[in-house]
Length: 189
Image (cartoon, rainbow, N blue to C red; front, side, top):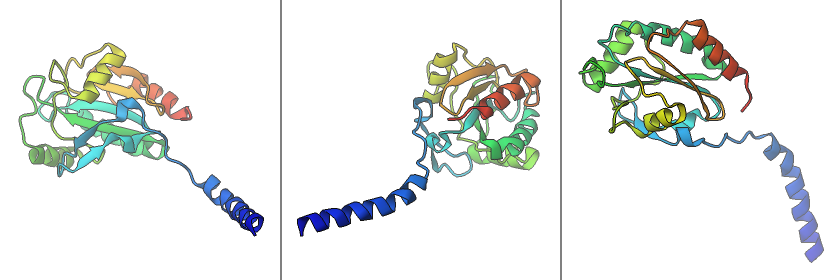
């Protein structure tokens, strides 16, 4: 009887193996994404691990910056490459020139109503200096580059490696940025 139960258990395990083998396991969360931030629109907590296995472009933004027109290009880039695994993450900050003085609601309304921003935006935060948030501390440590102004960009590959940073002058449609994104998207996690 004992061997019959053992054999039955083995058969049941074998029968269920193909189904479990076909179930994709979510990629493990790399250290760079192990952070949580409030979502801009409603302050709902957002765990960045939800973007594990994706290519992530992190951008500090400011509504009243001369580079604010980049919102439109960032949204176009996100819309074009999202299906391939790109996520653009916006982090509004008032660190440079006091160009993001508004509340979360004002910032969210501006981004959506003026530029149609649908890519994920986190709550207003500090991205430079000694009080920078932990994600930006990790980005600076990985690249040796502190953001110098609004719309500074960091590119994280599917494996959670920070592969490059880009100045505010680098527009979302610049060949240096788009080729780095394409290269990162082509890599498998």
